Length: 135
Image (cartoon, rainbow, N blue to C red; front, side):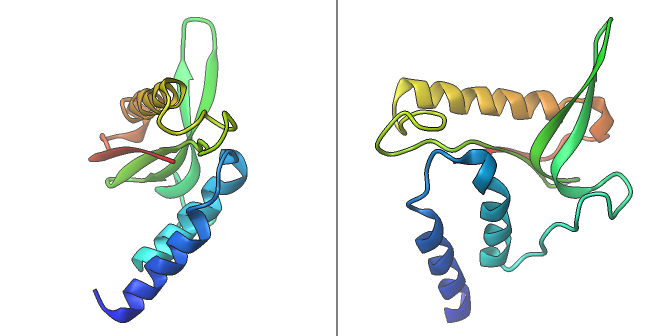
């Protein structure tokens, strides 16, 4: 890791460490900045590539006896990872609960279970090697 890498990571940490309780508003910006901090390619705009192999809000269809529904994996890269984002808070129950509390931990476990249900869906083709939740 060189000085440029350290600088990008420090910028990322400084920007995001104080945010809380706004998952829907923040997660795409967070992951775009995360890609930049790591020096990796950012996802292309959704719909610009067949089947969206690297995107936000990956469409995942579920079928039951009576209906079809579409769910959305927050951040997905085929053959690499599936991430479900949540955002807790440090000082209140805003978002998915105060970090470190039972409510928060239960919500994070629920997010991981959600990621597992998406990953095991056959429409993705193969299991992503990494399933993650992120706050």
